[in-house]
Image 1 (cartoon, rainbow, N blue to C red):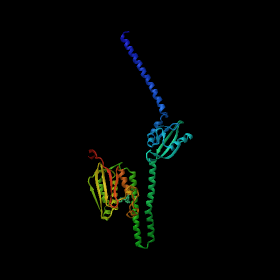
Image 2: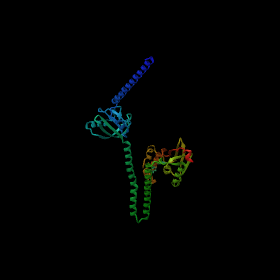
Image 3: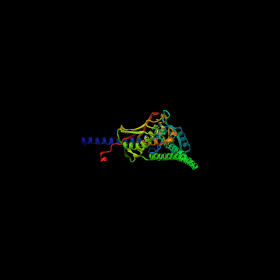
Length: 382
Ligand code: ADP
């Protein structure tokens, strides 16, 4: 063998030894990884993936109630703190389940946040053994669900209460008409009052139907392109008779028109309600102004009156359903307390808002702010 063969042999040997040692190192590294995985995550296969896809927050505890695994939802609800459970109520229930082996469901109020009062959350917690070494804790946040149920309950109670008054009045007046059958003047007077109550009932029913329609329909699902200048014209028109009766002038000042995406009917209803309130809650022979302008992609429709104004403590509440500052007076004017809650819903469902400036005794300005629609592409215009 000449020298070149020795060199080639040495190279091949070196390569073989190198390759073998790399392979061995690979096996060692793989084994090491597996061992580490078992040591740091002793949770049964697939549990982590399962907890990750659950809608509820999920936690897996070991035999000493240490947190082995917590989904992001569990952190959001603030029920784990590192490796411990924050809630004593949940921990007590976990201990019971270890003893009994029976799944447990409990409803509890949990305070999220550690600074100040925090937020109260209503949780439904399910605790179940996972084999005999682990415990699964699932927590669902029911706060919003319970709040909505409360709103619905209040709403039904309010509706029944509000409808009871005019219905009761109609019944009493019908009886009075019957009793006064021989006295045409009294019959006429009772019949007129009956008409007022019937009108109020009709307005309330319409208001309720409008409200429930706005709440169940999303105007941005199949939006129309709505010109605000046209909406303002219609809203003024619909209030003309009322304004004339009080010798009031409605003065529009449309600095700039813009198009909003949504429902023309609903936006008109909102502006009409604001104008009708401005007329309703102002003294005779005053003016109502409607200013329209565009600021940073938002169109502002400001309805200003020189009326009675609204006290600071009433400003949030007037947007609630059926809320009236002066229920006795509104019985005379026929107010239902639904107008502003319709305005607020229309604003919110169009991605906007309604703001209020007011000074008692001087007047108010309600401003409906809606996002202006993007310019359509050239192709769409053609
Ligand atoms: P209503 O049918 O009673 O007018 P709204 O929801 O439209 O119901 O208004 C709620 C309450 O807010 C009214 O009862 C009234 O007291 C007050 N309010 C609304 N608009 C005005 C306004 N422009 N000026 C003063 N008060 C107003």
